[in-house]
Each structure stands twice: as C-alpha cells, then as structure tokens.
Length: 365
Image (cartoon, rainbow, N blue to C red):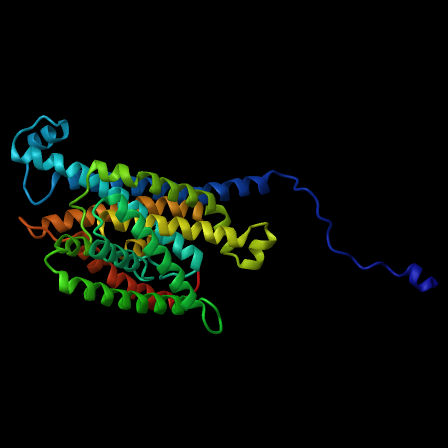
C-alpha cells in the first residue's frame, strides 16, 4: 500500500440500513393493510344488502300479485288463499336461486383461476352442454328419472367435457391459451348441442320436461331437491376454500408457485374438481344457465382485486344475488306466464361477454 493511497480520502459508501427511528414505517404498513381490507369488507356489505333485497323481491313479486297480509300468511304457512299459497311456493324457489347462483359464481371464478382465462365460464367452455348431453342420453336410452341419477350422469358428462376441451385447447404451440380454450369450448358446445337436438327431435313428446329444463328454470326447486344436492355443493365449497390461497400463488406463474412451495398439479386438480362439481350439480338441479359464472367474478374482481380468498366467497354472494334478481325479472315481465331464468341471464350476459372481450383483449389473468 502506497502513502498516497493511505492519505487519500475514502469514497462515501451507501448509507447503512438501520431500524427506523420512529414507528412511521410499521404504522404505514398497518394503515396500508387496513386500506386493503376495507374494500373487500365494503364489497361484502354491498353484496349482502343486494342479496337480501333480491330475496325480498323474489318472495314479494311473481306471476301473481299478492298483498302484505298474503305474504305474511304464506311465510307463516297458515294461509289458505291463493296468494298465500303462491308465496309459500316462492320460498323454496328463492332458496334454489340463491344456492344455484352461488354455485355458478364460485364455479366461474375457479375456472378462470385454473385456466388463467378471463372469459372462462361453464357455458362458454361447454361444460353445461356436456352435462346436458349426458342427461338427455340417459333419459332417452336408460330412462332415468330421479334427481340423484341426474346428478351422477351430469357429473360424468361435465367431467368428460372439461377434460376434452382442455386437451383440445392445449394442442399446438403455446399450450392452453385463453383464445384456444374459448374456441375449443365454443366448438365443443356447438357439436354437443347438435347431438342433443338429434336425440330430442324424434322423441319430442316423450322429452317435453327436458326441453323446459334445457333452457334453465328454477320452477322445480323444492326443499327435497336442495337436500339431495347439498352434500355435493358443500364438498365443492370445501375444496374451493382449500385451494384459494394456492391459487393466489399460481396466479404469479407456475415457476413462482413451485418456488413458494405450492403443489401445482394438485392445486389445479382440486380447483377444477370443485368447479366441475358445482357446475354439474347446479345443471342437474335447474338446467344449464350460462353467463353467471362469467359476469360475477369479473365484477367482483373489479371491486376487490384478484385475491381468491375474497374473490371466491364474494362471487358466491354475487351469483346468488344476480340469479335471484334474474328469476324475479323473468316472472314479472311476462305475467301471468314467465320467462326462464336462463333466457334472462343470456340477454344480460351476451353484451357483457362482448364488452370483456373488447376491453381486456382476452389477456391471461
């Protein structure tokens, strides 16, 4: 070492990292966390209010105009007038709308997270149509008639269609891109719809009930039917709760998720199983209803962000409110008849799908 180097002043280095002198840092972090939690809580309160309003409207309004006394008598189960009997029939129908809407909203959010596809929906991916084809084949050739048989047949059809669409959408370079999955789902749905028509046409009189079921209707909702599907829907809800946090890691990319300790294959399998079970069970119960699983997760995501721990339960609430409101609209606009809820959701959902495709340009989530 030379004398010059010993006398030369040393260059100033970067300032050392020290603990903050004031609690401003932790306070800002706590304030930021409270700010992030405030929006989901506000969305939760808003959706609960909308759901409560939808339930009240579903019980109060319908094909028959009823008064306050008849509503109270119908809810108490002690009325003998036609209005009170009509209100008593609306209660299980309303419960069916809430349960089916919650299942469809959750199913759509799960499928969008698994495929990282912003336009993933049980209807667009053809899963509803696969369940419908399985049921019509079983009705026509195996003469099934109970809801329990519908459930297992719909489950098999929905699962097989989901695997088929994903396999077709994964072919070629780039793997399963959003556009390829959507095209595979639309093409599969069109082909399966043709098969359903081919089976229905020669048996038009024998499958009249299926034609009404095919457009999606809540009119057959009963407490016994809800009790039958409850175990499967609870299983789907439990699986969704288990995969909510791993799906957040998977949204960062597969390599990042593996680095964070997430078992990617198991997470995708459980999430897809939860989505298919929820969709197939709802389809067996009320028929194929499209666009609820598309519209609701997108709206909730705009309110609370992409965190699946909030997105999944709030999509369930939003789906329940939307389907219940849609059923009320279908019963009111065509008095004394009614429009099937599947037709109402299609009228609302088609413009929303076009808006999403134009604004998001079908980017991956």
